Each structure stands twice: as structure tokens, then as C-alpha cells.
Image 1 (cartoon, rainbow, N blue to C red):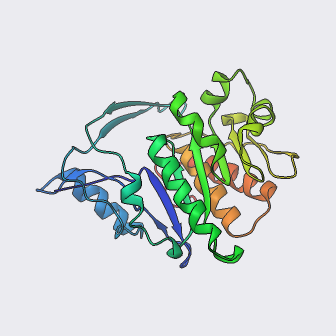
Image 2 (image 1 turned 180 degrees about the horizontal axis):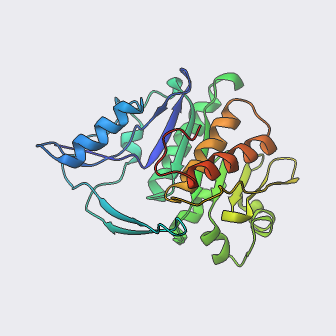
Length: 263
């Protein structure tokens, strides 16, 4: 048997716990990667009950080199044949247990089907019980661009923005917002220049970056930003407050190794 690392993270309504319902592929027979990942999940109180266990594939492995002078990182990925999460896998999730579901763009055609499942579920619920969705369009793969028109909140990367001809976060947000569904929010972080966003009111919102005195480790800063923004919005904070909080937490992350103690 194999298990699998999450391609999408889900926030459960019970005490705002993060759970990873979908994906991680680790060889169960005495695999050190499996033991490390699952023990780290347990230490961080990450729920793993909804992982999809795969019967084929290997655990992807990345070698991350951190520059001790400026905190920049180089990642060398040993990718594998781990199957992606499918819409059929997602159908098994009890959506009534969730408040917010986030997708990192991967196998977009299947992820669109998952998002449509949530849309259908929300149509049968009163507003207070609906699931909020967010997606991240990070990689410059055209297949992923269909995700723009689905999430209630859409995160777009600097690299994708540049692919569309935008060279700042404000330009990207204003130029790409039309791709979103009505009423959605678009967010774009731009490293040391902070982040910009636009919500249903079409007003541009900005937060400066909060750079640490010394940049130690930038690995995962973007994911940290996304998670902090989602947490703030899910608690009812305004878009400007959530954007600022995301930049603050991402800045703290860049000043330390790893992720412990950043919130």
C-alpha cells in the first residue's frame, strides 16, 4: 500500500483544524519518508483520516538547498508516478464537515469536477452552511488557467501573471480579475513588493511586505502566505486585514528555518 502527500488542503469547521484529505504517496513497508511525514503531521495536529491510500506509485522526493547568505532556495524534485486525486476520490468526502476547501492547481480537469461538486452541494445549503472554495494557479501550465473561473478566492502567482504580460501585482489583479466568476476575490503576492487583491467591490487592496531583518529561509513562503490569508478570511476578517496578515506571517516565515512558531 501507499499513502499520499496532500495536493489540496481542507479547513474543517471544527476548531479550524487543517486536514489533508487527498494525497500523499508513501511506501508503507518501513519507508522512512512515510514515517517522517506522518509523524510530522501528528506533531502538528494535522488530521490524516481522509487521506486517499494509493495502491501504486512512489513518494515524490525533493532536495531543497537554502542559500545561507540570502535565504533563497533551489529545489531539485525527484517526481514519481504517484496518481493525482480524482473527482471520484473527492465524492467520498462529507462536505457538511467542512468550512473551506483549497486546491493547489494540478490535474485541473479533475479539480474542476471537484469544484463543481462543491457548487452543487452549496446550492442545497443555507448560506451559513456553504463551503467556501479557493484555488491557487501557480504553475505556468495552460491547463490550470481554467481554474480561474471557479474558486471564491483565487491566488495567482507572479510567474503566471508575467505569462499574461503583467509585471506587478496591481497590474495582474486588475488585468486578470475578469477571468473570475462573479463575486470572487483575486489575490497576487509579489515577494518583497507585498501583495495586492481585488474583491467583489472591484477596489484594489494592497499590503506591503514585512521583511525580516535577516532572510533565513524562503522555502514555502508562498504557501504560508496563502494559508494565513485563508485563515484570516475564514475568521471573518476584511480583505485588507487578511492580506496584511498573510504578508506578516510570510515575512516571519522567511526569518526562520521551517514553520514552527510563525503564528
